Image 1: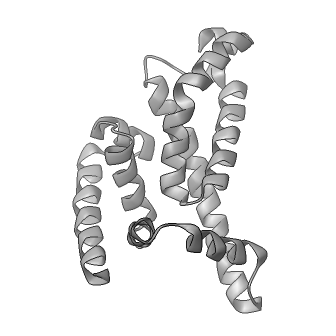
Image 2 (image 1 turned 60 degrees about the vertical axis):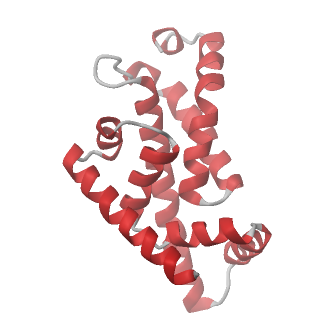
Image 3 (image 1 turned 120 degrees about the horizontal axis):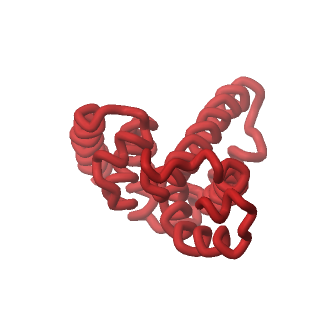
Length: 172
């Protein structure tokens, strides 16, 4: 990242190649839409390039720093979608809502059930679950990404697993 902060495009290309799959997988799971996830990852790389000099290897691992950027972008997007959804409900269906419904129909039934169960979780529970189980990050890194204590992350995971199990059992 020191080389990237000095404008080394080759070093940046290597970082992008190494970390893009994990970041995209995280964003897809959090947003449940591949196209939005890809846009978020692209924005992550723009920010990583622009803020490369802000990365401190002594403070956090590179993967943690990149996941934190992606997480923040996903949360911002989810909040905007929530706002649009409330507005659309008051003024009729929006184009994004129609697109979302069409995409849900395309998914296989089992994936759709899991997606609905994950969506029923709070944003914090969903994030903790995805970072821990899908991204295979240790609780210490998850806590840093989410700006929480390790104990708070563990508590979120317990509640998330319980709610996920209940929701999936109810759908059977």
